[in-house]
Image 1 (cartoon, rainbow, N blue to C red):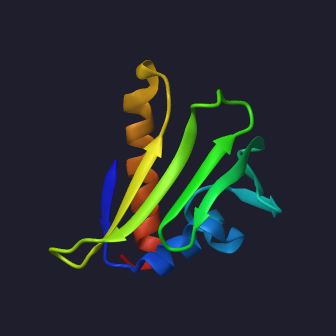
Image 2: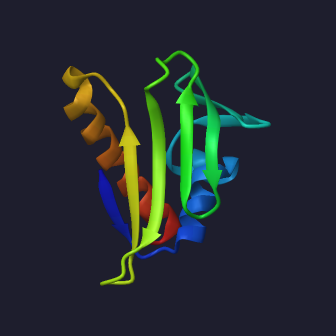
Image 3: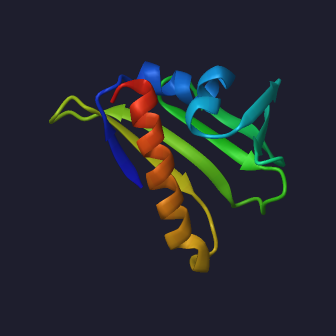
Length: 118
């Protein structure tokens, strides 16, 4: 999925990697130790390892309990045409979960837009 933002890649990167901003739009709590992120939602925890990090460009997480080919990836770049920031999200899921995941990301990204100013 791709989303357009007025916020810069630097601001988005901060909202994707910093505990104090992640809890404003993505999860209830987050602990980061080395490159391991422990996210909490309503008391349930999910653990993901940050396996690729190019500041202000790309983040790729491998979920602890997922198959090796299942991951969550964020890519950020400026559009050459509009100069807006594009946030691309790749979130692997089963085919029967795709619509639910799209709806979830729409909701989360709307929160992110509000929190980061655009």
